[in-house]
Image 1 (cartoon, rainbow over the protein chains, first blue to last red):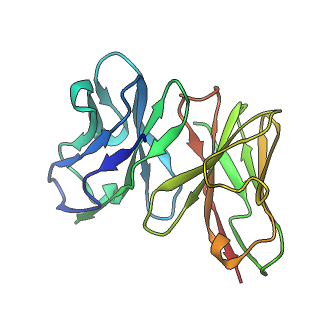
Image 2: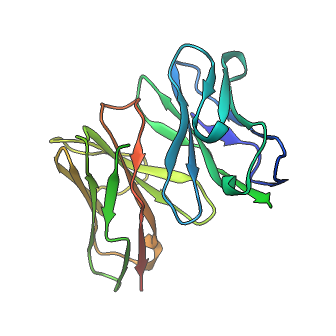
Image 3: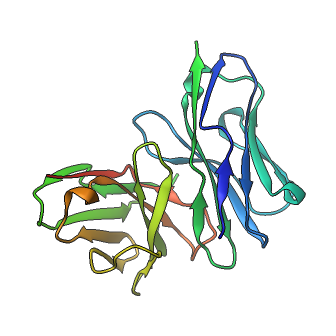
Length: 113
Length: 116
């Protein structure tokens, strides 16, 4: 069965620290990849997405993610986090054949001021 | 950006009653709408996918007679939890996509259902 795994359930960082959140998926076909973010008290919103082309994708608020097809990974990175990045981050994968979205379990990030 | 609303944001009902949740795309036409359920400290679980004007496609294990989905127009989908029971208490989230799958989904704020 297709699955998406996020390696870290909880991450605590100090401001200015670098961030990398892991995401791996199990589907072998063509996929579209997403990172969504849910800030406290708000609904899910798109952070960035990869459909094709340059595997290094830039998103909002200084986030980026790199698609490594050979590793089935789409890790999210930010060089220097801010307190306002405190949120829950979800990796999502859609296989372009079946159009079914599968979400990872989410990673709760807490940034200490 | 695209905006999706849900109504109500919170609902408390008695066991055995039915509850309807609306999901609207406010500034775009949603060819496809998705309904998710989110349990505490867990990820979103896709319940069903609905395309405007056709029957919803339910995920395995989701009772279609219990969770009725209607996608009557390109801007509105409804989820009706019929004969709700306490175990149906959860956070229900809808999302909408402008194309038939594979595209970015825009999420509603969610509806918290509590069944007493």
